[in-house]
Length: 450
Image 1: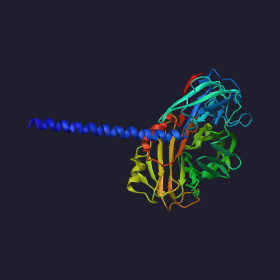
Image 2: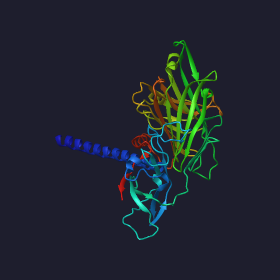
Image 3: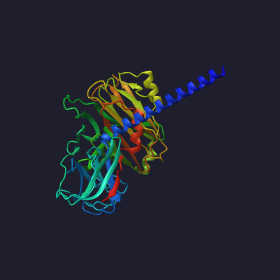
Image 4: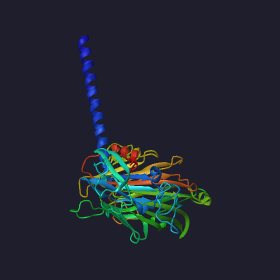
């Protein structure tokens, strides 16, 4: 009898070990798939501080090249000036909305050099060559990816350049075009996005997946006796700077919040557009009198999608694919809203794989640690609900974030990331979020001075 108990216990322990190893393998596999998906669109960033031996030279002295089948090939790259907060400068001179840190047109003071990870190759330069085509190599960049090592090389005084652009922003039409998507904004407000179209599948008819962006700033006034609501109509935006590069387009926008057509508060928004993702950085510092008349302010920013029936939604604390867009809220969606997000884990992922265009949309919000605020999810799945501004009836879905108790008189930065991907493979949303937040869409290479 005792032997049977021992045998049963050992069998149970053996099965438990197999199950644990299986779960560990699945988790590792999910992280690897998420990493590979992330690396498709990842940007490699090197600062002037990383290359102090070669910094201080004119920007046009630098080039980035790779080896392809033994031949040197230039790849797209750019060098951006940065401000005192480390953000890229969209304009230099009188139109600059920020204070630049270094000298214009010189790679110095933390300036950023950007290239695409996908352009790096597996070929490593091993020894000087007698080939007259060989460039003057100053440094090797190495990145360890999910598919192995990738190399690129910093070159000086070489006129060869790639003419490929991954992104372009049109300042006159507020239109963004990349090799992956096109984004149009309201012609009266460059901050309000409208049509979002995917161009990676050339054989499909392009249809927008976005109705509009909704912005709502609300609070109490007159000692809390009444409420006030600002919407898209109360925003007056103007572009104060644009920097187009082959890897990133940077757009600085000043936005006034209007009451009776008079500005009461200004916000500086910087939009950064890449091949497959976008970053919005908001800087705000209102005068003290605003806090006297405007109490407990909150801001809600959401993307009202256009008829994404069958799409699934996952949030930071929900189960995978907890929301299924069908025009009405289900019990599982109500639970997802309740579970939602918090300040440290503010992200959602929408996936559409049943219809074309097939895509994945991942959004993440960064709120400063010293903020005493609450962050919640905005999620509406209603085919008949109208919330202005509205081009197409319904919220299918309307998805975003709400931030409570904004410290309007305190200077602060907030950042919003939106990553767009394909659905060729099943990616675990929580695994992708983990990889994304480890990298923040930026990869630092190992640098070897040659």
